[in-house]
Image (cartoon, rainbow, N blue to C red):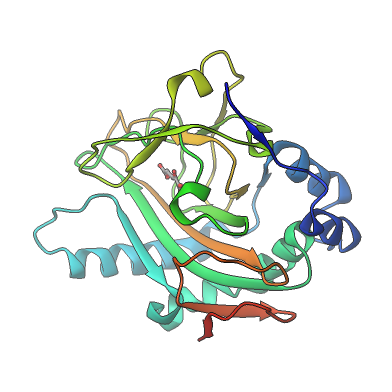
Length: 256
Ligand SMILES: O=C(O)CCC(=O)C(=O)O
C-alpha cells in the first residue's frame, strides 16, 4: 500500500481539542481524531426526522417523476430551501461541529442518499476527499431510517483518514466514479455501522467508507451535510457558495 501520511496534529485538531462543546465529551472528540469518525447516537429525535424525511422524499419525487433516480441528490448552499437550511444550521449540529473542527464552521453542500427495492446499489470503498480535494471536510450523515446491514448501512475502516489511499476510476453509471484500489482494503479491519433514525455519523473526508447493498428493499434514507473549518484556506473549486455558521471565514466563496 502506498500512503501519504497526514499529520494528525493539524490546526483543526488543535482547535477542536481546545473547544470541546458540551454536546460531545473530550473522549468523543479524541475518538473522532483517532478513528476519523464519531457516531453520535440520538442527537435528533426520530419524530423530528419524520418531517425532514417526508420533505426530502417529496423534493426528490417532484424532480424525478419518472422515478429514474440514481439514489443521490446534492444541494449546494445557494439551492437549499428553508427546511433544508434549518437542518444544516441546527444548533445541535453547529455545537457538535465546533467541537470536532473548531470555532469557524462553514456549510458547503448537503446530499440525500437513499436506497430501497429499486435503488439498491452498494457504494464502493472510497475517500470523499478525492471528489473535492483542497482542505479537509467533515460530513454529518444523519440516518432518516434505521440503517442496517440488510438495507445498506455504511461500513468504515477506522483510522484510515491518516493516509491518502490510491484510487481508481470506475465505470459506474450511478453515482460513484472513483474507488479505492482493492489492496487498500484487503486485510484491514472493517466496521459495520448500524444507525437508528436520529443518530449522526460525523466523518472526516479521508475516512475510507462504503456501504452494503440494499438486500431487503426496506427504505434507507439519509441526509448528509458537508462542512469545513473556515479558518483553513481551501483551494477546492467544487463550491462557489458557502454558508458561515459561526466564527469567520478566510475563504473567497460567496456567502449565502
Ligand atoms: O450512503 C451511502 O450509501 C454512501 C454514502 C457515501 O459514500 C458518502 O456519503 O460519501
